[in-house]
Amino acid sequence: MTTERLKVDALGTTRLVNAREGMFIERDTRTAHAAWRWLARRLAAREAAALAALAGELRVPRLLAFDG
Image (cartoon, helix red, strand yellow):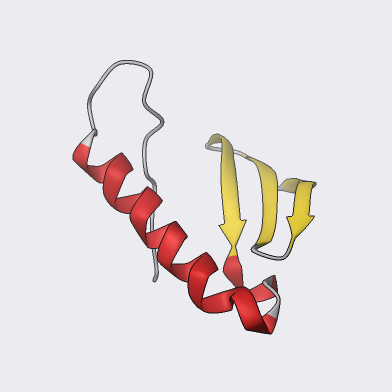
């Protein structure tokens, strides 16, 4: 498995992961600035909920997992 860091900012890190099963995006809020970590986690949860609600729709990425 290889990873490529796409973005690092106050809300965390976004990586492109290339695994045997395929490619996927990983968002890591643990690396968010301490003052913004609460917001990063809330936004990640909101994004996960939206992806789950739209599951099965064309052109919507599949949510593999959310641990927040």
